[in-house]
Amino acid sequence: MRKPAICIFLIFFLLPSLMLSQEKWTLDKCISHAYENNIQLKQQELNIKLAENNLSQSKFELLPSLGAGAAQSFRFGRSVDPLTYEFTTENSKGTSLYGTTEIDLFNGFREINIIKRNKLNLGVVLADYETAKNDLSLNITRLYLQILFNKELVDIAVQQVEVTRQQVKTTQSLADAGSLPQGDLLEIQAQLAGEDLKLVNATNQLKLSTLNLAQLLDIQDFESFDIDKPGFENVLIAPLSGSSKEIYESALLLMPRIKSADLKVQVFERNLSVTKGLLSPSLSMNASWGSGYSDRIMEFQTNKIMPFRTQIDYASTTSLGFNLQIPIFNNLSYQTEVKKSRIALQNCNYQMELVKSRLHKEIQQSMADAGAALEKYRATEKSLTSLQEAFRYTEKKYSLGLLTSLDYNVAKNNLFKAQSDLLQAKYNYIFNVKILDFYQGIPLELR
Image 1: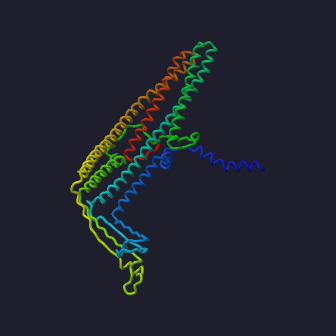
Image 2 (image 1 turned 30 degrees about the horizontal axis):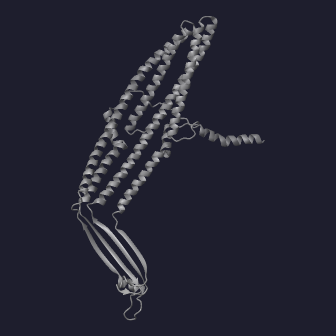
Image 3 (image 1 turned 135 degrees about the vertical axis):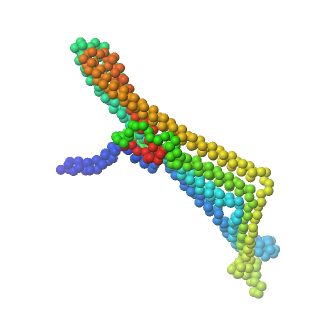
């Protein structure tokens, strides 16, 4: 009675975990997992928080500064009372209180421009974060398609090995019957050994590509990691619609790296305004209040020490002042800073043009690669159909002893190469099409 209960318990609790460990990863799941766990993205998120803090701090700089303090002093021997300014040789004590505040009334709008610059800097960091996510997504897609390509290569290699094994048996029978020389048997056995090696190499490439994706996703359990194989029902191997110029114009509006480059130009423009503020006069206002207590201050009528509260009112002082600073000559350091800011702005404009040019070249390259892959796919598809028919004919003739093993191996190798070329062209086309779709704002997905 206990054994069935134990079996039910194991099935109930272990089956879900086994199914979970065997769950295959889709491209969307891989990308979502990377967004949540990638260390570089987490570092970018910290940069965003730092930029937000810098923006908040620059806004707080507009507020007046405020300070207060108190001091307690004990004087022994001859000293000067700080409130009565009288010399005394007796021990005394006193308390002083003060408060100060200061605010910039005008400084060439430097604080305002710093706030605007920091706001633009925050936009740059956010755009860089999106750029990092895009780069990560494209890298995951590339590795994902590489695994799919290697999976199909393994399938082809397995089929080739199975076909050759059957031919080894056939050749063995023909050689035993005297229809084929013993050398043909040795040659077909050597072909089988070579194809076994190809299968091992293809399997190793599959494991390596799977490991690369698992490491990019920071997955520790590499052995149980596997991806889902889409059917590509919605992927049509057809001529591309649209031109590289149209895709480029769309990418200029959508790609965060372009937004980042444009915001950086605005940052340097605002930084130029900040440095120009150094040449402007500045005006500030300050106010202070102070008071104190001393045991040397006496009331006139009672000749007793004046009470603490009364002394605070009696000894209080208030001041209000304005400070105007006009830069006249400072070894041309401010003018030099302005020139440096202008040069940095010009360099940033050049950098933005480089980013745009690089994007345009990437789109043109993807268009060219996709077009070349399409032509190769069509040509290889036609060739593959002919080679499959030729191989079937060769296989029949070889089974009848009408062809040598060399002719059979040549036909078989040609068929394998065509199948590999067709796979390579297909996945190269799919990857470049996905890149072009991505530049137009279409999410990365494989179906």
